[in-house]
Length: 573
Ligand SMILES: Nc1ncnc2c1ncn2[C@@H]1O[C@H](COP(=O)(O)OP(=O)(O)O)[C@@H](O)[C@H]1O
Ligand SMILES: C=C(OP(=O)(O)O)C(=O)O
Image 1 (cartoon, helix red, strand yellow):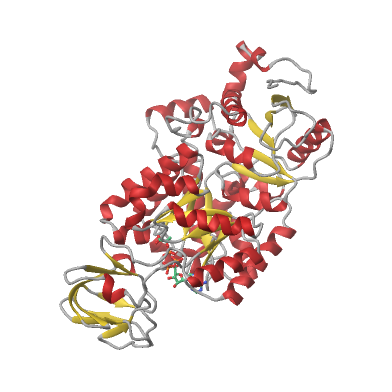
Image 2: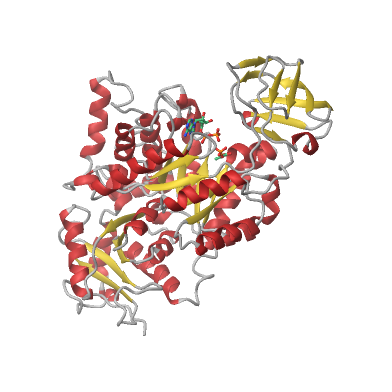
């Protein structure tokens, strides 16, 4: 039987619909999370401003592309500004005292030479990294193992913060070979790509893919490094492709090669990928990001493999290949989420298609209740500069507004000069943007419709409506993560405090928009479990004395198995 119960202090209080009149008005005025960020004077005034001029800059939260860590000699004034932001937070303790914990949109950081030390992993985590990404196109198992161990060490010692691990497969990508030093390609010059190994001269370089010569045709446009350079194919031999440089530039080692409008005729999961996937299983990573997925078949193949080795790892498909576009629906249906991999996507397809596809992929994922990540070039200029371009700031804001679960940093954190600053900028821009998205932003038109025949989905939908109306956060108990992921997709305004008794579920939930995962042992007794959850939230300053929370007891695997009831309660702490 399903029921909606409201409790005031105890489980038997007045029904939530009784909250009306003056009390309801007060509740609606209460500061929900976005208002906490904005609230300096009168919340109502702020709200009015939000409706009339949504993009007015406010003093209370500023974009502060500054961290003391990236530049040791950061001026005292800048540090004061940073402290100012922290002071906006009330009496919370631990990670919750940091605004980074309250941001809803999550941040994925690619770990590389700039960040693969203990010190930097800790600093990234404290600055706001939610997911550590290992790109298997670079490094080896020894170097990736070291990073995995460090992230796990951080998770084990951090009681109130958790970082998920994402292993990104190399896939059938085509790259130029190693060069002793970068070479300059000049517009109009002749340049050759060869399938012979180990060539790296001023006029010819190896390609890592034997069928390259068969896949390209005279007249094809080759894009190097995501389009930084381009060359037109003039002629072919058995082992070489002769080109003329159209747009020149500096060619470094192991750069991406794409043929405009074409995907390589290679399987999406190569032998190397299978080897890396096994490495991921052994290390119990949380997510695979699978490169160059072209159809759903490969996702099923990977899922079957994971099932056969009893590995609970979620599969994020990278949408980056021209061939994937006609199959978007079936690919995303088969997966646990998608990444808009704009680098290769913008090389295989005309670049002007990228923002449209980004919007479409986010829309599809959100309507299906799947996670979605926007990736590549988000703060590209910060690889070498300490501040972002205004266009980059807008790009982050757009991804947040479109409803992405996460935004991703690649070279910025892997080999950039200012990895911590990049995370801070991403965090601040996301947080600032979220503050203007009252009610969690735009909802996909069919949300709440697709799932309406399922009890859990119904509860997620109504718990969201209820918590939005009352201005409360949501507390959910989950063994598999299912119910909190479901709630996340309804994008409630308040934080989703997801209590789980499984460390791996806690780690995985770090990717999902608005979810704050918390580990807790469950008691056999529902009431005792509720009490200890609320007491934890209170101790951490996550909820205040007298504040109300919406408490959800539902899901495919209810934690109190003897009870078949589903509950939404409103409780006063
Ligand atoms: N594990 C690693 N080891 C060495 N360098 C790395 C590593 N991960 C990333 N990088 C560097 O950071 C750059 C940007 O990362 P990313 O966007 O993930 O790679 P790419 O676009 O080359 O697939 C890479 O081109 C590479 O130079
Ligand atoms: C994320 C991407 O993939 P990778 O960094 O592995 O090339 C991309 O192409 O945008």
